[in-house]
Length: 187
Image 1 (cartoon, helix red, strand yellow):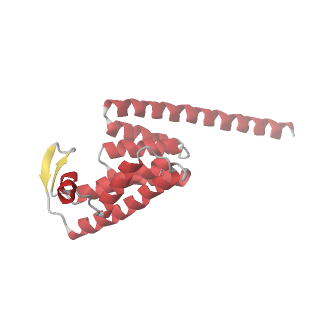
Image 2 (cartoon, helix red, strand yellow; image 1 turned 90 degrees about the vertical axis):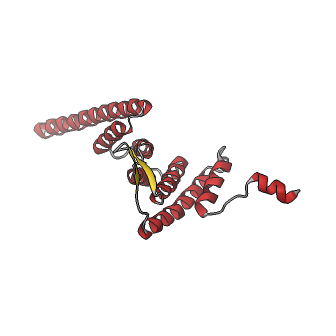
Image 3 (tube, rainbow, N blue to C red; image 1 turned 60 degrees about the horizontal axis):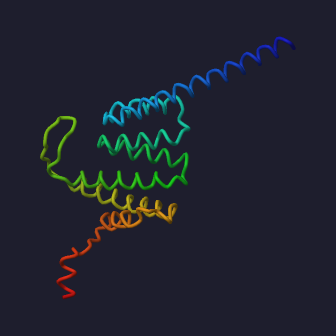
């Protein structure tokens, strides 16, 4: 009986020690990622954040930060996946929906650009926009509208409401008349 109690105690201490070591490692990786993000090295930040997720996949903040780093690195597919994973952990966190909507909208815009700057190659690239690209962009815009509306639903007193509403209109294909045209029509 004493041996069983001793073994159970040792196992308990080992589990607690491992959890503490993991938490320290996760925090160190997240801190280092924040440093890289402040320096604009989004790839290095993404690597640290992914390593943090590999150690502890339950911290929604890490997914959010990975999504932000990936968006800044123009890795929209990675950003979208990170935000979606974060939403699974914390669906009431309004900023996930805003950032996901922005990533989806921006990704859609890049899919329909014939000329763009390829940061990996450090050069301007021209490409043909396919019907598949257009269809994917359209789908992303629909998802962006849904996520931006969810952001406003969760954050009804959002200070950036007007900006978000304008982004929703842009994603929906609604265009606003230019103020000069409105003045001319009124006059």
